[in-house]
Length: 259
Image 1 (cartoon, rainbow, N blue to C red):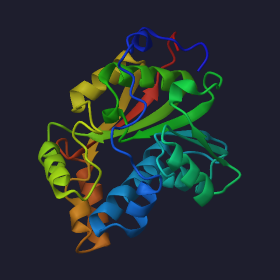
Image 2: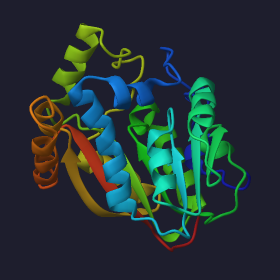
Image 3: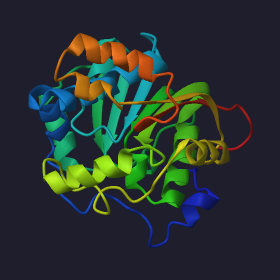
Image 4: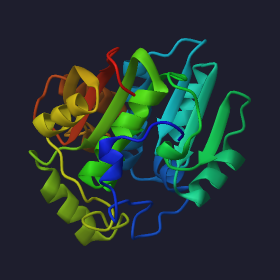
């Protein structure tokens, strides 16, 4: 991206992750949402629900989905509808799958990292970054948030989700890795570890103001084995919990100087 170099960006020498050490299938999120076990389907549906609930895009809005994977959240946003949804990911096979699976005139898939987008300042009304920032080194995460601040208009929103390492998540991550049912997480995918205070400090340092924060996906996905209605009810209750499995932070782009 032109004209958005920051001090955080200059610290990335030798510390720039452009992908995970394990190969993730391009259709992974689509298959998880469509054909996975009930908790996995509900987990990925919750991402769509969070994006719609907190971004609340208007039909005239332009929305960015960073780390879009196979495109299920971007496609959901495009259907609401919005004027334009741009879905970005560094995994070429995911972008190719999204382009083939979800064809809409207001949905565009781009194979790139967000700091490679050549778009004008304030181009987007809102953005989401769902379970991505833990895949980046901390200084690269700050550079990401600064790049997003450049791309989102003043007053626009950014939705971030990431595992909460002040919860039972480390144990869940170990069990998932031990089971072999998902691509290995610890080390191969997740290299940064957040809790509420750490993520809020990162947001503030990058020029964002935290509007709201809570957690999700603690009990609700597992309740989906019994009933989707029960899982949805628990999802609403979990919005009041501070110590659940996944952090949910809703940020507002400040209008101060800087990009």
